[in-house]
Amino acid sequence: MTIAPENSGASPDKTIVLQTMALRARPRRRGPFDWLFAGLILLAGTFAGWRLRSLMDGYEQAILLASTFALIALGWFWRPLARLMLAVMAAVMAAVALYGGDIQRAQQVFWLKYFLSSQSAMLWMGVLVFMATLFHWIGLLLPEAAARTGKPPSTSSASPHTAQRIGSWLAWAAAFMGLAGSGVRWHESYLIGPQIGHVPLSNLYEVFVLFIWMTLLFGLYFESRNRARGLNAFVLLVISAAVAFLFWYAASRKGQLIQPLVPALQSWWMTLHVPANFVGYGMFALAAMAGLMCLLKTTGTRTLWTGLAGSPALAAALLAAAAWGLDLAPAKLLGLARMLAGLAALFAMLIAARRYINPRTPDIALLDDVMHTAIAVGFAFFTIATFLGALWAAQAWGAYWSWDPKEVWALIVWINYAAWLHLRLMKGLRGRMAAWWALAGLVVVTFAFVGVNMFLGGLHSYGRL
Image (cartoon, rainbow, N blue to C red; front, side, top):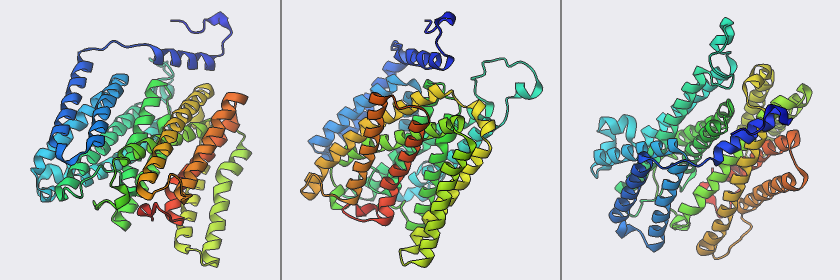
């Protein structure tokens, strides 16, 4: 299928985007593996429904049934995800067998202690994320072997560097450990006590794990389906920051401990609202990184130094001054100042290295397409999550909307991306303006996700830092 012949006058960037869209739309026949996968997922869902029937009400059984068919659809849509799900299912079943109904075996059985218990799996996930980030950036910054030797390349220039392929394998391994760890943690909560058992979505530690493996999968999908070489190197920067926070939260706040659910969270609404919310967060983070790649390609050096490196550095200096001079929770302000200073340093390194980075990243048209797709999908899921959250709030607190700080900032996030998509549709928002906006949107999302928990309170205080 030819999208744009040589004499059509279509630009190379536009041709790449059109070819990518055509590849996405091409149907694929179901093979033996697809039907085997569907059968195994149906079997697992049926077994879970039978095993946990006494612990689930009608709503939860309906969610389990819908989730089973949703997993089959996702596996059919993207075959690597099906393989990952089967591997995770096998690992979780092995961990359940090794536990044998006794939570104390987590420190007695070798495979549980060092690999399959939830805490071991989360540690492996974090280490693998850091390693994947390192290898992706090695592959992005170092030239191909053919370029170093002067020999003509044997494959197209779009082929990934060997180090980037290793980074992708490590990212898959990290996603596997994160998913398996979440599944095992779910089982561990019931081993502690049936009244404590819950889906691992109830506190900052658990939702950060959700964000990490979910965003990993988003990055892997966009990089493979869109042929967006180098995208995951940037996405992994956000994920690595999330892993660093997760480790800090576990070490300083004991967030890894499984605790009973507070009354407001003892609801099946949690299994719908939280995942939908984090599909939005993950997609917005990916869109921001695509926007950052666009800015490095299209924006002047002075503007980049001022907007990317200078702004967070100035904000860090102001916060540090406020922390020392005013009685405004100085420890938290200093912590935020350090994070902003680190962000400024990261941006400075990216600006300094952009002449090495830009030739190895996707074309602007493809990055713009990725940015738009990610924001559109993220906005759709975030809208669903907001609607579900309102229904949950009515059940838990007696009102659909309480102007709680978390709710207010969720509304700000929603309005921000609604405006982005509206201007994209009505005014053709593209280029540097769209990229700056997408990157600034991640700042808003980060504050809604973490900043509200650090500096504000309200009804969502169960996630307070």
